[in-house]
Length: 318
Ligand code: AKB
Image (cartoon, rainbow, N blue to C red):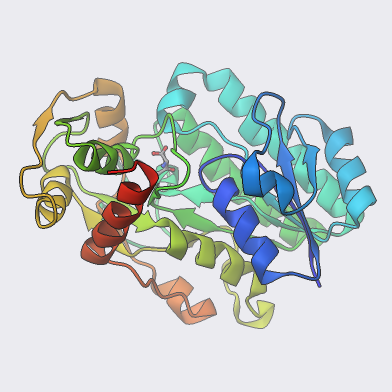
């Protein structure tokens, strides 16, 4: 049995992860933590408990951990990369002061913690191709700064206090359930909505810009598998490179045209997002995740495209 608190349960990852955790641990309690203004709706609300859980409010987190006898915290509260460039101090507050709150509660109450890192934790001096697990991490965005610090602080709490912290470096995540918002990789979600609605897509990322991407079912599985992994085999903890596909805008557009032949795309490059994308790797090497806990993705660009289009047609009545 597991009792889990998901902080940020109504966001892009949280809305799906909370539901999957409830299915995976039917005898446990999976609490959907939310902030005011982002309350859970529909199945997320009706399928289990929910509580206001502002990551910046340590007492709130502590009370929920006590009330539900929580043993694992998924801390998904974060401003994504482009938003964090606009609101750097708010990003710092949520990502760093929030993380300290979670780690302190976890230390006192003996909880395991998953706080995701990202391809954003790398920077322009990182090797671009086959980016190794252990390498230079000198990001130039505020999002990246907070993600490297998240990795370091999470490892610190493990080595200093024995808090069971583990995580992955997520690529850009693609899903049809909840939109991301404020990320550099969001274009790879928005492009499918435009294609299914028969609209021309205006791409904010320049042709030729490769970034690691992943379909949400693989990302959710990774988030659960890393927390279930046998600690004896973990040489790393915060955080593992995980990869499944890397593409640039022309390649995803071509994948969509195999199913929607008249799909059109033009470019209006957003300088903020492009600057961030140019500082991130083209593709990561995930050998350590494969070796240490058996990570393997199931989706590639074509199978993801088929599934995205099929499900968006249902969702958007097309
Ligand atoms: C973003 O684009 O900011 C995120 C990420 C890759 O971490 N999707």
